[in-house]
Length: 104
Image (cartoon, rainbow, N blue to C red):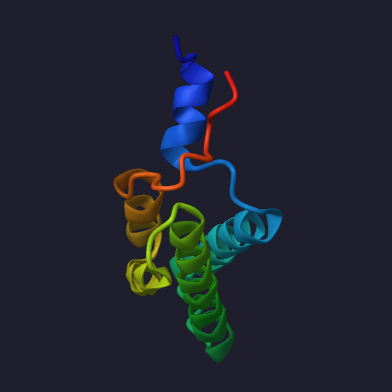
């Protein structure tokens, strides 16, 4: 019987390398910073650059995550959708390699 933790790990693909996880965390932090800047009504070139950087991180992370799950790295294109694109890659793509969450 597969434990709940192993099932979650298999579904999320928590077997990706540290660089990919770092890209995801960095992108989410940058998007939080951009959101907090924009909430204050201070629109600047800095917030625009940070937003572009966070989207770039998400595109890169989505491509690496899809490749780690055995899919075409062209799935990186969904990274431009932001967190929604990341969720598509994390939850929507099945694991073709069988390497995620196999430890029982």
